[in-house]
Length: 478
Image (tube, rainbow, N blue to C red):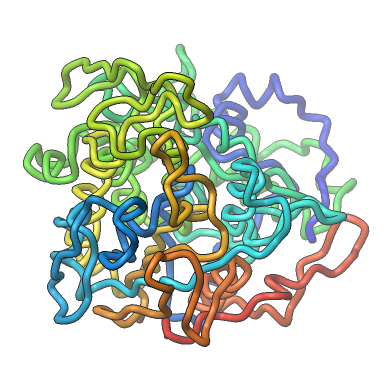
């Protein structure tokens, strides 16, 4: 673990030339986080990058990936099974567009989450997904993306190594760098990406500092003895200099702004993803992967007041449209039923803000990445913190269910057109001999990236922490 560099240069000095804004707002980097370029490290995994689609709230697996047409009528999903591009592989009709890319997907229907208490908590469930470790232990574990940033760094020095789109939901707060230095924290873009005026803040120099003047100041700074050459270790000095060079590149490199500029994408492609918030977040994820960001996570839901086709749209009755469908899951509009419970404020699962936009965006993402050759070295994971109950409750909703749910994977050597595991006729319990946990999911990511889990990361006091110590890579994904 690298240590903090002691330097008399204050934050105001950095801000005066724009560096502090870049470090704090764009990357979160500090001196303790500076790492040599990952190109200097040997990678052995099939994946070079990871893209996680985290649809938060608990997507109903029996209404999507794991259709159950033989369930009792009073609890059966109204959405019929449909054939996919792969013979014998079925989804429900809510995934009609995704069915067209089934040959690129492995659907794991035997995910489970056996940790007591987590199933009743969205924050804990989200933290579990972000970190791949059950929350509540003696240490706050870092996100998988932060571990990857620490172990592999980035090949695109003008961009953050890990990003969360948009990072504005209440559960995004459970994303954490844990005991790692703050420079490995995920970068959150913020905002509504469907807004025609959306921009990532702090991507340029501060007002009054043009590029020539900035470079002059940076050159002057590099020529000065700023106090840490003699006070710090050689490794720390090298790290600080590398950090300054990276920050300068971020502020002046036009590729930085281009990577975050949705306006560079053809209108037809933006429409293919869907011009709402979700579709544009999925598209931005592809842009960042293509630009070289190591680890991208999408955690998105349509806001109550949003944009579609560049025009304002309002979803009356919605206020937190994640997948927590405790009430009126099959409503054609909002779920605010009389005497409703925790599921009010959503929209029904089949509506545009929910599975309509998700099916369109995910299918477009897989097609787009395949056509660009990005699936060859990018592991794509479609995940949620748990599933929904096989039985309807008294409010015509489905509650949290951890005993069985589904994840989908693509890219980086994942076999396409494959279903792994099975559940009973209601979708309630796993019937296959294999079952997989979120620790196994995390272990799969590390294995795909070629990260040696036998080599621990260390806490600030030197305690070794082994990655996914209770997990094992999912063999069917290799």
